[in-house]
Length: 316
Length: 279
Image 1 (cartoon, rainbow over the protein chains, first blue to last red):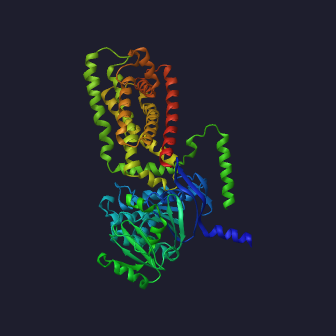
Image 2 (cartoon, helix red, strand yellow):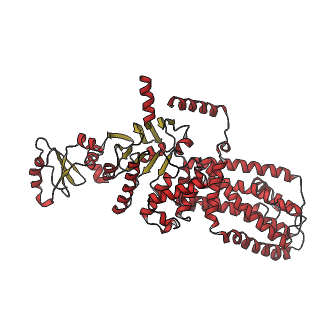
Image 3 (cartoon, rainbow over the protein chains, first blue to last red):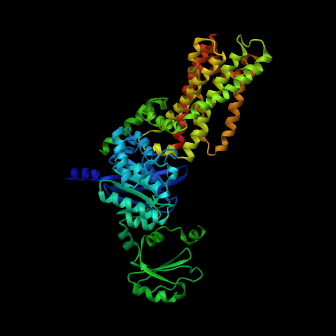
């Protein structure tokens, strides 16, 4: 029975990391983290810049070896299975790196050679993916003629070319306008609903993590601050409702009534409680500041977890 | 499954410690090299007119200027051959080396930094050694192509007087492997495109020493030694011997030295790119 449990764990885990560490000189980019990702799951890495999200993803995608700790991808150790692991992973990096001199289709066909795909297979798979990302009518266009959103979609198509079991997206929507973000999310949700592919994504947009990720870890300065389902994190770390008062830097935090917690960050006040009624009297105090009572979101969790103190926040 | 891979890991490390020197050449996959090389060809093919024009324009004018212009002032034979033949070999070597140099400095830097082409490739199963080797081989291919075009020009001008001329691309291929590896190594180590200026200055100064325009023998003692240390001197000397069919014993040593330099610096280029890209 024990044996069975052990094997089944290995099989259902797409990724497992224990004590995973990466140092750059004396800088601890990733500092002994443990996590695992189940097969078919959409898993998020949430954190500010420099939290260690990208470095963790680079280690998973076998672009850089860990300094210490163990990291298994589909049961294969990253230290000696780099080539095999990379053939099972599709990567969408932060920056688009398409070949600007080539057409949309040529970009895919050239990329297929790196996976040693044969021509027929590459051609049919390219067309299939161009249809999936809505670029089949632009197959002959040059990259320079594409909009930012189209380029991003092509990057996703390119990462899926070799039918990877794991798709790694490093801040897939950073720097894109809201409309294009929706477009990308739609593709990823469609991909998720089809099943069969484990999706890892890093982001510093709470909205994105909440919408897309089934489970996530919150990282800061190379360490994991919290992990779980977005809804659980919100429930466990903060109360269900939040009162947000912007532009209230000069006003001191109000005395807290029972069942209410409060914090001040970036010149705004945040009060948390389990019902909107509890927060209503507080909101009245700020009438001219247009206070907002809303359900708590991941950003509230994030604000509470990623500390650094008020001074740090103001310095940023 | 997991215990298996840990086992493999230990075995691999043991292998590493057994060998005093493990060359990057063993990590190259030739299928991967072909894939990267074809990518470069496909991008370059869009500018096919440049393929012929670029290697023709400058060497033709150099041969006219040096062979006929300066040659008419010299009158006498240089190192036992006409100055046209002498300088023809120099122009050939100079143009070919320069091609490899530019491809692996500005060309490689552009792909590495501005286009992130290397990042895109390294996300796939292609290892960094295969990528580096493909890049160097690409530079060498362009250089070899140029050497054939210029050789035709030299035939037309009457500067190539021996059938051995057909073998002239060989020392130039070895020379451009050396330059390609060296340049890729330097490109991997700089973080600012202006840093190439110093390398370019050293490269072009050394070309004056290495016997392209006048025989190395006329240099004063110390400079002559410096000249022979630069592998390009050997490449020029062998190319000239093949062009005119007049061989010397020293060219045997030169060939060995050139091959040695090509190997060492190709290795260095591959290691440098790993240091830069796999972090």
